[in-house]
Every structure is written in structure tokens, then in C-alpha cells.
Length: 124
Image (cartoon, rainbow, N blue to C red):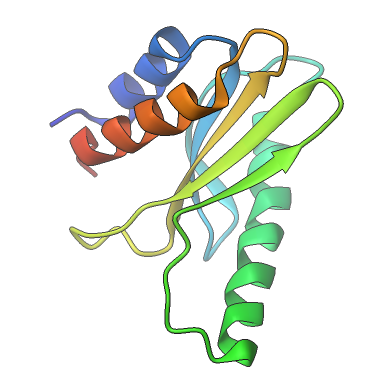
């Protein structure tokens, strides 16, 4: 099992094209840990903004009566992928991993696979 800091650092090194990663509590919108980012990618702002995305999707699923769980949410920009992976199990409800990727260097399928593996090893 890996702690938050170790898991986020692994996301940055193991996932090609990573620009920044965060663990976010979507009940509060607060980032519990961040790595990477920079002046063009403020991970605290991204955490708060993506909290709204997750909440909206959860509300929509409830209104539709869908009894399924969100695995991940992908936002595709011109030059980036933004991947939101909701954490499940072991009492992790209300948390998500956020990963920003450079679209020209990232392999989206491998990024999703690696993020799933990192989630499985994360100990909160």
C-alpha cells in the first residue's frame, strides 16, 4: 500500500505525459495532495472546478435513476486530457484522483490502466 504523496509521485513518473496530479475530496472541493502543475495548471483551482464536474455527474445519474458507479470522467481539450478517477472501496467514497496529461505525449489507454493500478495501491 502506498500513501498519497507516493501515489501522486508515481502517477507523475509512471504515466507518460503527466502534467499534474491531485487527490481531491469532492465533498469539500479541497485537494488533499498535489504534485506537478505550475503557473499554467493550478491544481488547487483544478481540484475545486473538477469537484463541480463530479457533483454534476452524480446528480445527473441520480435524476436518471442510474444504479451504476462512475469509474472515470475524461475531459478532452485541444492539447490535454484531464482524467478524473473516482475512488471506490475501503471507505474512499467522496475522493477522486485527478490527472492532467499532455495529449501529444500521453497514451490515454495506458494512463487509465496505470491510474487504476495506482488507485488499487493507494492507502488513505
